Image (cartoon, rainbow, N blue to C red; front, side, top):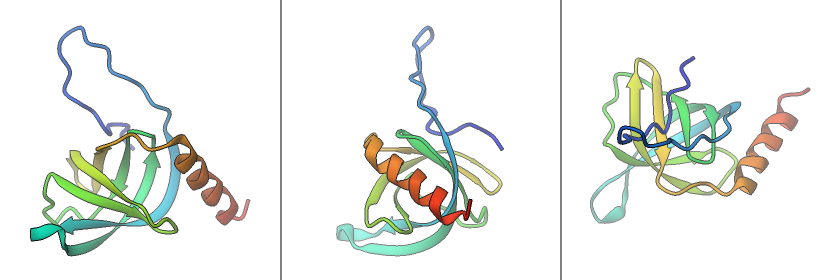
Length: 118
């Protein structure tokens, strides 16, 4: 699987920040927002890996998404503002509009570890 996620355009010679990636398999939803910030459509997706800056999702390649949407990870009430930065087949790379707190990512990893039956 490609590690292309939350890739921002950078100027020549500019150093890109690196954030540690964590592999998970957690269901989620993509919320496309309509007029006056009302939820318009909800699509299912599968979170494959995540960092504090972005994530890689498995998503239906036939569905057209806007550049901006919200990601909701099942088991968490937060709706994470996201931007699409990469899409190839079922792979959808997103960059979060704001860096996630490390505590959020830690909770997600702990939930994934306890639910995997290891």
